[in-house]
Length: 278
Image (cartoon, rainbow, N blue to C red; front, top):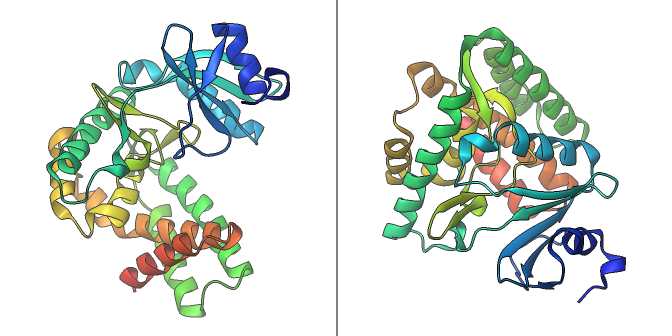
């Protein structure tokens, strides 16, 4: 066990909870630790490496957590100097540990759609051009990084730039989005829980579907059906037509991050999505 004086996560927990024990959890990243209080309740302490990610997640709990009541952790304490949050923890399993093709996997997608629908409906705004323009600008920066790292040939670069033009000219619905909405961040227990809010912001509504479309649903379309049954309605015509452009974003970001983080699986995913677009 790490001494409290050496770890700001443990110090924060001691301040709000008193004596705690560390509960080993091999699926958690190193900067996150699961803790058990004296009364048996479980908590998560998370230390951020970047101040903007810390501020973003802190804002998400304060501004949007109310729309996910019962499905999102609650903020218990914070340490702004150490960029550390103390949160309640859901008991249950990560949805990416469920057997592929099982009824439990389909139920998880249905529940995930239902909960995301609550967030999107509570924060939705009608179609506008600003969202598409902002998306295109951010996407172009990812393309530039990929070109700088020599990850694209000329044809692939032009293809991605064409999709940036499409996004720039598109009007689309916006909502507060999770932006990493996939089974590794879904918790299956007595209630369905969502974790990891550090990427949340207002964005195009369809952004929260794109990662699932290209990482899960392309190979298992019944999961797409279950998700949107839970969500309450399928993507509209505009969103269906734009899905390929969001796949282009997926490809570019995966290629760049895979390269930067020396992650061959992520790089391979980016290549796979890019090949589908071509």
